[in-house]
Length: 630
Ligand code: WTA
Image 1 (tube, rainbow, N blue to C red):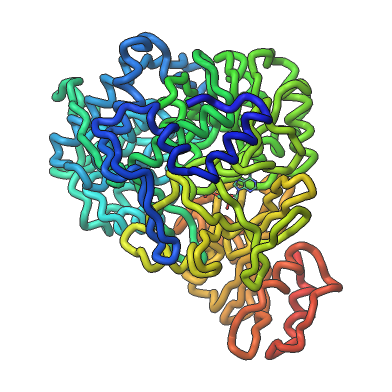
Image 2 (cartoon, rainbow, N blue to C red):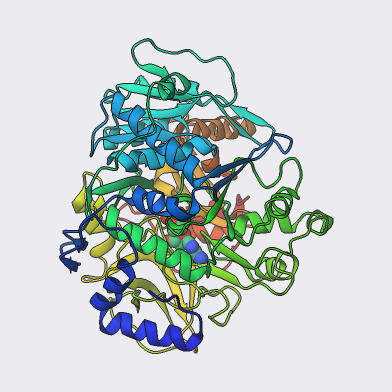
């Protein structure tokens, strides 16, 4: 498969991919090592929310990420690990070492009775072992469910129970900047409520004392000694589960998005090589956490299946100072750098000397993901990190899509700040109006849908296919609804304008407003809550909570702190409300529906033009809310 390298090639390949998707994807997929070739490229029915790719194909994704590179890349660095602590030596893990470690983890899991199809929860910080854990599961056909290690016990419980995990892989603790977090204590707290978990394997990181429950908890360093590095890869069907990854939904319950082996492998590899124009021997750094889809697809599976050197960074951009990213980029001679707009916005506020102290000559391509990037951040990134020379690929995609969907191709697509630009080959967007009509032509704005399947799309929500169908395929029958709004301009370029549902994106992380509301409602003083997003300088969106208490609080600040702590405890610190306004009522229609439009406007600082409030039961409440706005 030739990688697109010119605008003409893009047009030709794109056209071919739409006219004959079968031939196009068969060609892409022929680059991999299959145990048995597929019988049929795809089968789909969006009305039934049913999609399958490379039917009948047999493979193991780790053979494509590891075994096939060994003959010529055994000594090449696969993972470049950089500690949270700038004084701790970095680690260079070769493809051979990665292979050996992945096989050991595979065997370690087998020793605990883990079999193909069993779910394994991975709750670990960004250390090399998290990569061994993920790939070790894939090696033996176990389904990994990685839970971001910044989530609290409550979130961990929901995720472990929803997918019925048998084993949890974790560490004693983790480092994040100047903080040390006792992960094992969180796991212990969670496991009291997780009946399916039989074993926990604990990897040492922070060396803090932990209590080990006899019969349940094992030390990674003990177990790993007992096994060999010979672990034949399990033969998987293309459509066998590779992993489950939870994402927030419009109701309180997170959705376990299911990804399968064949299509996900083909798509993450193809998009990695195409969008970033990856060249042999380059160093690629995606700063996401492996707990999110970006980490799955573009720290691990995409780069490793392409034989790249991928950076795993344990720390945060601001520790020990605001120059850390640039220090690491210089130190490891990073060629491709992929981060989130929220990180750029926070670094942009720091003095330029933090950038100028470092030599970023090796950096050739920049990327962003996770939320719309604002013009100012785009230009700062382009000028100061890219020295005016590097293209920025603004990649739009979702946990559900598995890989990048709409994005410039570096050095191929014309750039337009804040635009994700054009669909990648095989991707067929359709912009819809609110009544379900497709808006064709250029210069339109509406809701973003996809009218044709692509290999890495999620196949279902774990254990709840009906919810999958309702969430993604019912709003616009026959189309996949992304939940995002978009514009298609005169050039046919796409600009993603943000979510149109009850999901807010805080520092690049999806949060369901319903999930935050139900956490706040747990406070004994709280009667009802409504949460909306509001524009936030650094986070993109902040969390604004309107809270009704049984009795108007006397000590507002104290209660605010309690509510913040509670949300942090139930979901995790990332969900903490930035603003909490106590109100006596919420704007509701006669049918009891909260008019969030009004709440959003007030949170945005708009006080005059609130639209029609005549259908509200009690329009007076709007004045109170407006007058008390924070
Ligand atoms: C948003 C992250 C604008 C969007 C890979 C999407 C973006 C949600 C962009 C998915 C972008 C992601 N421009 N918005 N380049 N990339 N989004 O599941 O609202 O964590 O629906 O996947 O992030 O977030 P998720």
